[in-house]
Image (cartoon, rainbow, N blue to C red; front, side, top):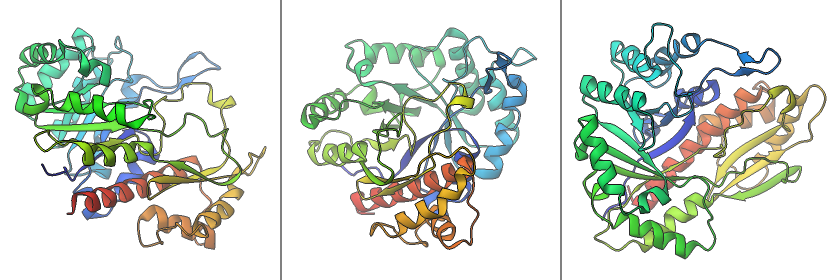
Length: 360
């Protein structure tokens, strides 16, 4: 069976992430379907309350999609928003998001999971009925191994009024134990070969990441981290017997599974630039200073360019910015700058990797 040639990066929706999407080439856009996690307002630890009301947080979302990802499909997951949260008019946040998106003609698909609360599932049901675009179903590996998984999914789909052939399965491994790899491949294969929803779904995508929660263990200067989720995916594609459906590939881009939720006043990390290369990331890292941390970035970019693994400034907009920062023709930026730079290049690199793997 053919290897699917599309990429699903999981993106926590902030400025760095949507700016990365906007700067993708048209060819790259055509093969990318982001899985967007909508975020709640940041928390003000000094005042012990959210910095914004949920209305203020979500009102720009549809416009941001329209401006940065126009006309392209995306999966939208509300998992990060606290279940009791409601808009000031009483609507569920997902209902608000999709009402606004519908008014703008956006191509969004809602995402749910078996464990979401009743109000969430009711919101999904209404969105499916209104938009007729189906649903994304996110599940973990242990969940998919449950003998009752298929029956539970069928029951949920009946409740949602969604046929199986309008479901996008998102098999999210998180950050699994990658070693030893062969037993993990065997387990994933058994899930994919189980038939049922994995055979009848509109699409099946495997997501995983090996990006660490913290960079504190990395040396200053240039370090290398294997992209173990990509190595796993390549090995899985080589190992799957012909009758078994090949899943698409997804990852967490240049982010870890755990989403940082602590007090950002005390969580300022070291300046770093993350750069995807064949089977790995290069991470250029400098010591954190009390002030002017961004002064480290030209040197970090210079180390990446001189590494022998730099793809060239024409490869992606992220690469172009890195080379420009090294040369002094681009600003030294801030954490949001370096998030879009790293994410934009990463998406471009993975799309190219998938094209090479699938022979398209």
